[in-house]
Length: 236
Image (tube, rainbow, N blue to C red; front, side):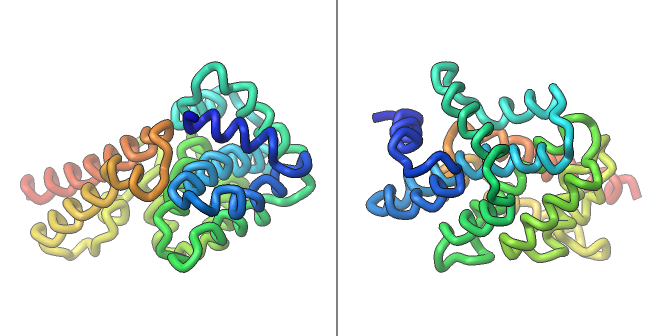
């Protein structure tokens, strides 16, 4: 059975019509296959939280819908199920905090070190900035999700800078290095980030292949930040 067939089967069999009930059911339904459980959890988290973010912002733009499809390459025959989940999330009385807490709980003992949570947040950033600006309500939404995911404030600011519109992000902040760091330190940090965010690493920690655009855009931002610093240092 394919990955999407498993999700479709899960949606059909999950108890109740509320998406929050489905999220909670993931823990037990896929208990025997932790890797598949993460893939399913990740997919449903993006659908649920992006739907809640759109509701918080008050407006769903065509650009945001396009961005959703860019990071979520769903087979055409499965789009009906994705749409169903999206609508369930918008209609569910449970707030986005409940979804975020359930997702954080699925990381188990990894807690704040669970990279899958950063992957989820990165995908939400990608959707939020699709219309050319990350609105204040969206930033507040993302900051609250990061807080529930136990992502430190300075790391959140690093993610925010990575997704800055029109290349306005601070390259040192994007790489997470001090402005006074030696160029050798900058290179070491750059290489570490590129290695950590290689698509194979994301797949290994449970990110479905359909979401690898997250890795591509993340590495592109890391490369751009390093090139900016390198150009400034060489030209100095």
